[in-house]
Length: 141
Image (cartoon, rainbow, N blue to C red; front, side, top):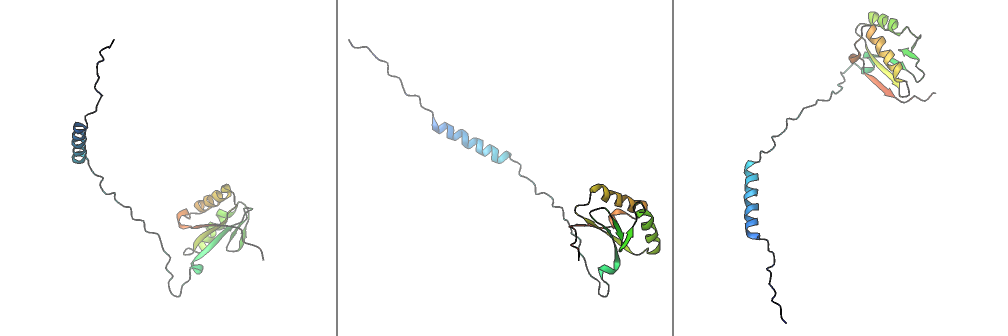
């Protein structure tokens, strides 16, 4: 006995209408897209050092040196603990045109460095006028 089988059609996805829809979407996105505007670039000018003939940079700056233990010297003169702001104020009165430079050891505690900056502020010297150079300890002679 033969049973009658119903032949089912295979499910097919219509590709041509899908291509049409994709093309329409592509055109829509191209037309409706707003492109990025070029960003403004911030120009940064790095300061350079120009040496004036007949004048060296070493002559124009005095050095406040702080070693790893926190001892402070001002132009090779040892400054006692707690008197740095007095020494700086006196130095500023005696040498009004002379600029300062801070030279600190890399292993110096941050607290001590902040104390030196506070002493500069109490002496009336703006911190931004005193460049800081952090370096490793110098080997002894």
